[in-house]
Each structure stands twice: as structure tokens, then as C-alpha cells.
Amino acid sequence: MRVAARGRLLGATLLLAACASPPNRPAAPPAGSAPAAPSAAPAASASPAGSASQGAGAAGPRATAPVVVTGVVVARGGGKLEICPDTAVGACAGIEVQGQVDPAFLSTAKKDVVVRVPGVFDGARLKVDGKITTADVQRSFNFNNRCPEFQQPAGGNPKEQLPAEVERLVQAQADRFAGRWWDQERKTMALWFTGDATALKREVQRIAPGARVCVLGNAKFSERALEAVRPRADAILAANDVLVSSSSLDTLGNRVVYTVEAIDPRTLDQLRREVGDAVRVVSFIELRDGSLATLPSAPRTGDIPLVTSRMRNEARMQALGRFSVHLDAERRCVYLQDAAGRRVLPVWPFGYSATREPFAILDFDGKVAARPGAVINFGGGQVELKQVQATETCGAQWAWIGAPEGR
Image 1 (cartoon, helix red, strand yellow):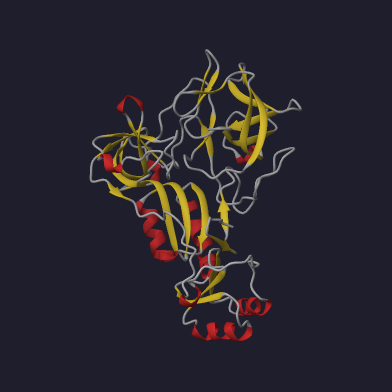
Image 2 (image 1 turned 45 degrees about the horizontal axis):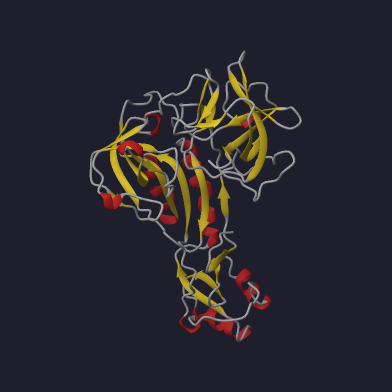
């Protein structure tokens, strides 16, 4: 369920990537705590620090690749520019932007401008080689109902549920039903159907006179139709090694939306052919040619192998663990220790690294995130070791995927 200040989506499905969880299987809850909301989606992968490349093909990563990166460009210290995923104007695992960027396209804490930046990417830097444009993104959700008769604000505190007779009507029209949302300001429930909804509107007025129910028609897809294309879209993305951060049924947009780390033209073309405009993909990096297997890898940093996420903008489970941080010098690996003294394999955010002398965990900006023996709060969630791609598990019994609190 997605909640906003003025309205609420009802019955919408929101699937978040439980980091390294397999499809349709929520990650196991951490000992002593539980996630704020269950999560299940295409698996996110973890890999040693610096090796955040997408997929592996015979051609191998190129030194550079032509791409378009979508996000917010932020001015950092020393005159450097960085593009971050989504609208993350704070610290992020972004990409350095080299070249001229019009100040109108720069984002700040008071203003974010999502842009598409074409350029040549080498794994760490993006050299601008074309015209920067604003991105077509959904800035907010408009929960206003669309019925002229229900446009005046309404008082009171009615229940956000339909009369039983109307609910039965909705169930009977399941093949046409495209979704529902609550207009909080006008205290009105909106119901959306495919095709002409004139007869349905009259029927609602007959069986529930006086009810503030806005009946709308002409949706392109029903919820059932959208859910029917999801397995095929999931399969296409998985077959092409696309890392999915999240997927959701966008009721107001009448489509399925996937947020991904990177995607290539071949995969986008296949999605258009097989699922059409029922699916929209929002990517941080979009290759202009070539496959994901040729996308340059992020440079290796640090001198201690560290397991990190392969996605910059991932959805995380919302449990909170408390652990101390340790280095196993003999195995040359980093582990966490819980209150019971058990070893836990940490999967750190994209771009994190570790140094040996002195031992420290560094974030994507090279700032110290943890030191030996330090006790940290680690947001995220517990997963089984087999769900994490790690050559060295450091004697751990299970893994924890997430980020130190405050980062």
C-alpha cells in the first residue's frame, strides 16, 4: 500500500527487492526483530567490493560504453559533479559527471531536477557527450477523484471502505477492474474499470444511494491483465541479467513499473514487443548500444575483500540489527558479531570498501563508516548464506543485507 498526504492507493501491489531474496520468497526475519513490511521480488545480488558489473558475457566489459544516466546532478566539494539515482541529493553511490552542466539542471536540498545525461561511461565517471534533458518522471501522485459531482471537499471521518453491495459489484467485474484509490480531501472512493463504465455508475447509484463512490471507465488495462504480464516481464529481465530494485503495480498510471540498476536496448526492445506499454522500466543507467555484459565495471577499491550490493538504488528490508564489526585477519574477510557471539556476513551498500592498515570500513565517498570492534545499528534484514554470492563467508552462519544506520 502506498500512502500520500491527500490520498491512498487501495489494493495496489508493491513488491520490494528483499536484497538477495529469490523471486516470490520473502527473506527470513532477523533474530529478535521483524521487518516493517514483508518483501518479495526478483533477487538482488551481492558481489565483492568493486565488482558491481552487470552480468557476464563472452565479450566482457568494455573500457567505456555510451549510456544515458537518469538521476539528479549534485555539486560536490572541489568543483566535482555527481549524478545520483532517483532524487538522492545527499550522499550517494553515484557517478562523477565530467563536462558542462547548465546550472538549471543542478539539484540541491531545496530543489531536485531529475535529468537524463548522455555520455561515455568508464565504470566510475560519465563524460557528457550530448544534450542534457529533464526526465519524464512522476513527481507526485494525484489522488483527486475525477467525477464532477464529487469535487467539493467533504467533512467527517468516513470509513475507507465500500458498502458491501458495491464491493460485491466490484468482485463481479474483476475482469474489468483496474484499481481503486481514496481521495482523502473529498472523502471519496474512486473505482476504475476498463471500457464504458456508464452502466456500472448507474448501478452503484442504485444500490448505494448517497455513497461517495466515483466510478470511472476507459482504463487500458485491468489489474488482472497487468498481473498477467508480470511473470513474462520478470522472466525477460532475469534472462537478460537485469538487476531489479523494485516492482510495483501503479494503479494511477495503469501499468507495472520496474526500477532497475541498468538496462540495454535489446532488453527494452524485447519488453516492448512482448508486453507493450503495460510495463514501464525506470533505469539508472541505460546503454545506448551493446549488452549489459559489456557495461564497464566499477573500479576496485580497498585491500580487504568486501561483499557489497550490486545496486545503487535498492529497496531494503526495514529491520534493524545491532552488531560489532570485526576483521578475520587469517581469512582476510570482514564479519559482524551479534549479541550471542555468532558471526554474521555483512552485505554492505554499493561502493563500500575496506582497508587493512588501519582496518576500517569506508563508504562510497571514502569516509569511515565503521572501525574494528565498533557496535553499529545496521538497517536491512537477514538472509541465508546461499542467497549471497560470496566466495568467502568468513565463518558466518547467515548474512545481513543493508546499510549502517544514518547512511
